[in-house]
Length: 409
Image (tube, rainbow, N blue to C red; front, side, top):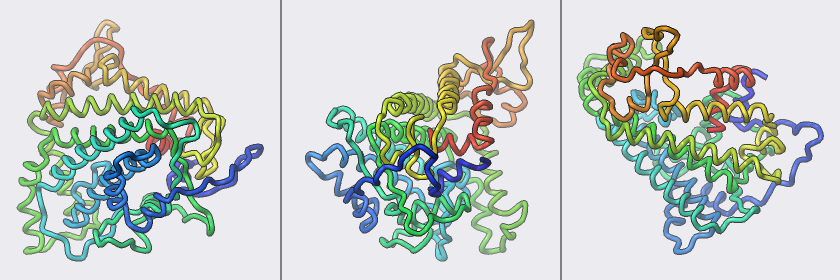
């Protein structure tokens, strides 16, 4: 069972459990084959110009805009051959090397995050419009072959044999085997998945706003002299335990964790993270009501995943809902975060009110947070989060909780 989550993420096909019949794969949408032929941006542009798009076209437009945002970020990273932003979730995907990169640009990370925030707002607008129409029925769905989906990372307008497909990226992350010959990763995205995608759009927008609160451009300007000197004086081999890449990242993190955060960005991040939980809860409410079992992306307890043939026990769903509940209470300030230095007195626990940190980020100095001084303005008496819900969820999945969390959202 160890690393079962990897099976899902890389779309490895396995046999369906006994007693569950495999449904006939649905007809793949022409939008899927159009993406394979023309790419994400071209199809998204065409759909955005429709006067009266059908519900499945609106869902496709929301999904494609989401993927175009990822593609744009990867293109920027490829153009500049930058790895310094690799710690940011949306930029962690491995990409091919650029043999002729552009000059180092200290504004790169900020530019990408501003674009991500804007793009995710566009995704949310399309999906909210879809739900407001109320035009989709129980049989509503958009059927895609995930093998048709690819990122034009180098921006040349054509797909490489390997490295640019969404499945290629998944397999390179997990180093799992490729799909068996003849197997097709066909998914039918339905009404429940609208909420799943809205949750993810808010999550990435929240990450972008969180990064922007640290003023990354100014930070990277301070680290630029060493990067500019690399081609002049040579640089160390990046395979060592301390490389130029590692030192750039460490310096950037330390510099970002100084001074005070931008409250406009931190408050925007908080709002997005709360919306993430709201839509994730709606997703699990909706998917629980589904009666079909057709090419499911994330199944309920009576369905199986189309890719991987996996069943999700009710106990796992309940455990994940508990994780979401705790996260919501932390963001609301109802559950506090413990600090090693301040255990409380007279049996009264003490912790940091994370909501107040987002609303008024007086200091983001990492050293002072560890030492405790930066935490003092936010200390309160009250219940402190103990990670019990997360430990239970992770234990049920044999240590693969993070991988399932990425899938579940």
